[in-house]
Length: 364
Image (cartoon, rainbow, N blue to C red; front, side):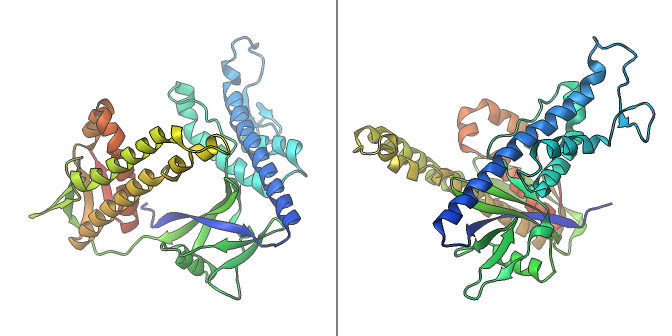
């Protein structure tokens, strides 16, 4: 059965809603402590479930040892005292209860056990290595904890999470974050999952909104054919209509200019005035750190948006990417293409926008 919903994830900055410097410091300390616990807990979960799966592969254990991963209360041949999914929750509860709100642990366990079960066959075949989580892992929690209260001035909201007061910071918000929040508060949208992300002293709320797909009038007999290339980022054919979206000169000129500018700054940083060591010398280089990434991300959004708009205009229900897999293999061998053309990024954005518009995407 076709899924009629789509999940939109938005990154919303949060500020601590207090002017007390000591209280703010304590809150940050608490949040980073919780993040450290989630980092350890995530690796515990994957390690324990992997070991459980591999018990029967330990050839040095006698044949009399029971290896059926089931609750002994429900199956007399089982070796577990609880359900398989609950084993790691009990373990983490024993280690961390009282040190972190258990809502974090419950959501983390539920999500990671689901991820493990989806990938367990690949682990067993040796096609995939076991996941290893890093220290900057987001802190997942249930959506029922979110209760936004509009602030008296402006369009910001305040909320309290685990006894820590926050307020949103949307800034100028040229995206749809403010609209999505208003619809969620009014009950027109459902927030399916959420997490706290700590990044360089800033706090972000990762909120996933569940919404219906766009109700576009599409014709199943109309098929759009698109080709991705460096010469023309997207070439589209729908019936008798042909479109070229973007060009090599338009896309690469700015990107290469940003690369060269950063390279010049790196060379010149040797002669920059010091004062705070490496940080002061590389200050100008760091300013250019994300310029290229942001530029490419913006252009790919523009190209993919234009493509989907044309498909909707012509009522194309199916979008076919021609020779895409072959081009991706060629790009892996070409250093210039691999560095300067974002096949995967553009394909992901097209897939996301096509799904949102109700268009079936086929890649060949």
